[in-house]
Image 1 (cartoon, one colour):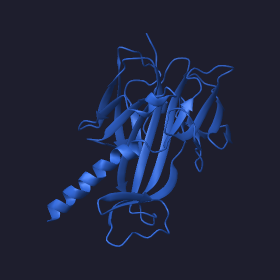
Image 2: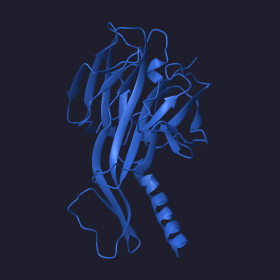
Image 3: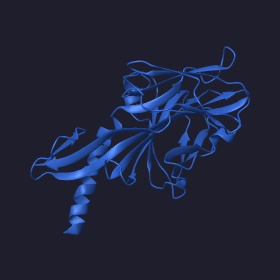
Length: 266
């Protein structure tokens, strides 16, 4: 009986994947991946269903920049609008910089089934209907990142933080060309995350950006490779559930991580 119940819950969670994939997803995207005007970089940060068309501002987070020396500093200028946040930062030293939205704790979600129907709410006051089976209860934790290089690429800023969910580039993200591959590692709290799904979306700003161009599964070492078949701006998305710390408003955290990157023709 226990096995049957577990299988049922697994099937229900699997059925939710397409819904989650089309939910509002955070992103952090440079307006240009090559700094101009004295090394100034401008980025947009927002939640969207279509990349990179902003819908909801990325708020309640502290934008940080890791420089070529590995030092993390707050982004110099952040303007929060209704649909997006605009970040500006001037690069001074040559090398690669890691731009991060900072971890953002979001809403608490509950999902249940009743009479063959599935419902989700983030209203903490809403009670579960009588007879409903709770299949998910988590708080969202979002992080969006991107890399920008001034001059020749460097690797210090690519060093993993060892905290939460993150994509660790193996191939340098500022050195991606069609006909080659983008190799990366997926880690959670510093450990390789095996068997996870990483979706890659084209950031075309039209309907096609809502459909994943590739769905990759990490191997036993948490590694995956994306074949670079065409140029453009892309977004890698990964989600992961894990036990929340003591005192959290939900038993689990629902981690969401995105990495925006550019692919050029050689």
